[in-house]
Image (cartoon, rainbow, N blue to C red):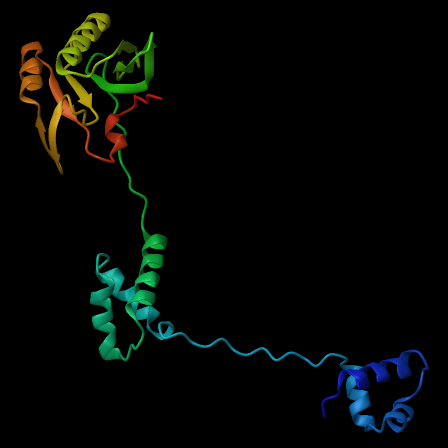
Amino acid sequence: MSLDPKTMEAIYQLKHEQNLSARQIARTLHVSRRTIRKYLQYPSPPKTVSAPRAGKLDSFKPVIRELLEQCPAASSVVVEQRLKPLGYTGGNTILKQYMATLRKVHKPPRAFVRIQYTPGECFQIDWGHFDALDYQGDKRKLYAFCCVECHSRRLYVEFTHSQCFETFVRCHVNAFRFMNGVPRECLYDNLATAVSEHDGRIVQFNPRFLAFTRELRFYPKACNKAAGWEKGYAKLKIM
C-alpha cells in the first residue's frame, strides 16, 4: 500500500512529536499497523536500480577487437560487413566511433632517432616573417633569412624586404661567409624559393636554385611535411 504525502506527514508527527505507538497511529489514521511499521522503518521507498540495457554493439566488441588486431587498417564498412552475418543490427556510426576509440587507445607512439650532425656538415635554412616597416607611409613587409649551423647552433640572421630568388641566393652567400665555409648539405622546410614541388617523398627543386647549389657544391635537402624530427638536433624556430 502506497501512502499519500499527507498521511506520511501525519505518521511522522504522531510518532516523533506525540510519541504514539504503531497501534495508536493505525487507529488514528485508519491505516494498518504493518503499513505504519514499514513506513517508520523505511521513510522513503527504496529506489530500484534497473540494469543497464545492453547496446547493439556490446556482444560484438570482442569480435571487433579481434578483427582490428588482424587488420588494424580495416574500415568500419568492412568490419560491419563481417558482423552482419553474426547478427549485428546496429548502424555504422556507433561502430565507427567504437573503432576510433580502440585505435586511439592501442595506437603505439611513433619512435624515431634524432639526427645529430658533425661540425660544418649541415646548415638549416628558413624564412622568418615579421610585420611591415613604415617608411613615411610606404609600408614594406619585413622578412628574416635565418641560417643555423646544426652542430653548434651558430645562427646567422639577415633582414630583408624581399624573398625573391636573387635575395635568397645573396643571403646564402652572406651566411656561408659568416660561417667561414660551405656545408655538405643544407636543409629546407619546403621553402617556395627552393622547392617547386613536393609530392610525398618525391622532391623537385627550383632549377635555378639547383644550379646555384651545384655551383657552390652543396647538397639541398627538403624536409617531409609534418616531419619535424628530420630537422635534427638543431631545430630552428622563428617567432
